[in-house]
Image (cartoon, rainbow over all chains, first blue to last red; front, top):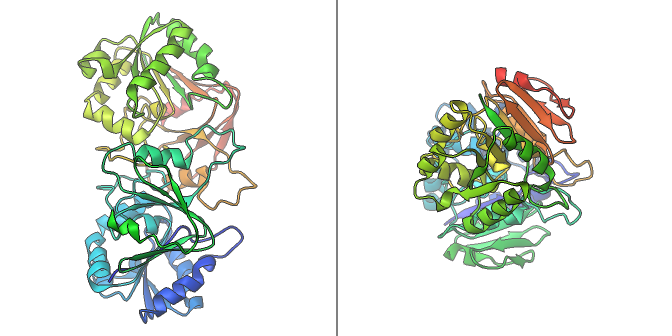
Length: 238
Length: 238
């Protein structure tokens, strides 16, 4: 009874916060009759300000929003939430705080056993997957593990970026970095989600949303491009 | 009696491996009468091939090179090395392997107590500093800590990249990421080393080498640009 909306990024160039995915969020939450969303602002330093931004965006879509950082007990807040939205920022800070607050297993339980809708954006998408090993962020703090909430058995690289043929920069491309991840045995598939893309998961059905192709990397195979609206359910059978 | 050459990156656009820093490496090693260099290839998966690339480059500069992965005891190899060169690749894999092989403290001891020359490039530069918290790499494996060899009391961001004013990509800029690092208390200065730049450290004197400016970030302050050949010794007094 898994219900996930995993968004690559919260803002696209020239747009407002969550504007490009507002329709998908509305549909996703309305289908489960959600009225109020629990927001997790841990990926950014200024939680009050972040919660205000998120509240404004969700109210515009017709939902109430309450931030977990203002609640007396984060575990209890997850326990009684109708739906959760984990926002982007620094993935290491986010994952560390989820463990510090003891809510990793509670979120997993609520999503996988109770069917609580989960929305993630950027870092919030990373922590919804099997691990944060394909984040783009700097390791500014040390989490107790890179294992994440594990709502899906694969990894996502949000903000996926194609190599720039005119670049003179010699740092590794995103594809090279993901290939390095796959040099180790038993590494899961990685979904490269370009900015503007989303992944909708309902039970065992996975669909690519948004206007762009996504790129799937599997260990020992050439990457494959999938067009918008592709059924990517095979990723769950890894 | 610290002797370090910390290189931003091993290859610049259009050049060969270590070509842009060959003169600085030659000078640096010759000054200590080094004949043979111990190479650490742990940041890349294919160690044999990496060692061959490094061996070719160092032989061209007039030095022998032996790779630590072909030695029966890595600790013993560090113990008797004349100089060490740690190459680039994935910083997480590199740091984890340095700990797995038990050579972090041996390298620190040899460099800080015996004055053994240390050359690092990219990931090899990251692990020479206080922590890997300002690497650009993906966390493909989980090291036992982000603390690194600690030959200097500050962080480096190699391959430092200025924001592209024409980019429509919404992922954080390098500067934003470093500022997020500095949101935590007691975080050390971060030196943004652009591609082609190097840092030379001799005892308590730190000098910026290469044709470009470097950018220094300190918690709570605006970043400052330093021109080539700047004396950056103040970074050691953090």
